Image 1 (cartoon, rainbow, N blue to C red):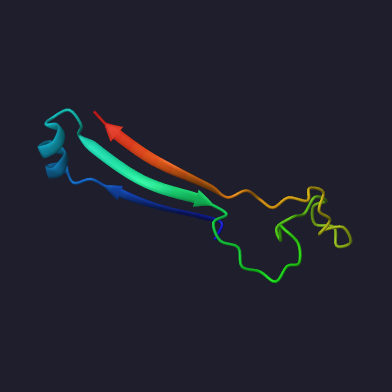
Image 2 (tube, rainbow, N blue to C red; image 1 turned 90 degrees about the vertical axis):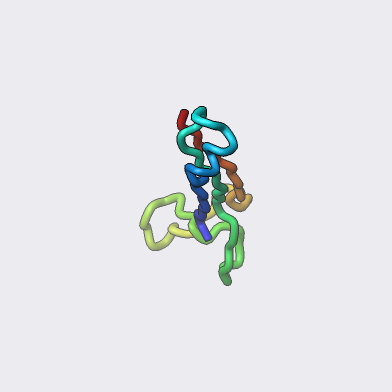
Amino acid sequence: MREISLYYTVPGATLSKWFGNTISRAKVGVSGNNILLSTTYGSYDPEVSNFGTQAIASTVEVTPYPTSRRMFFHLILDF
């Protein structure tokens, strides 16, 4: 799973009840990169290709570390 995100827009009635007329729209969410990797590839990163599309050297890995997993939390407010 390379990238995934999930967002929720808070209903306007709820915003009016909580904040009055201060906030007109609110959206909260979470997203992530490289969350799940399922492969039979024997090394860290199956997407590696440091030499382009050359058939002989297309799977040469220069860095021995896997791609990092990252999580982000989002808050979008319109005033």
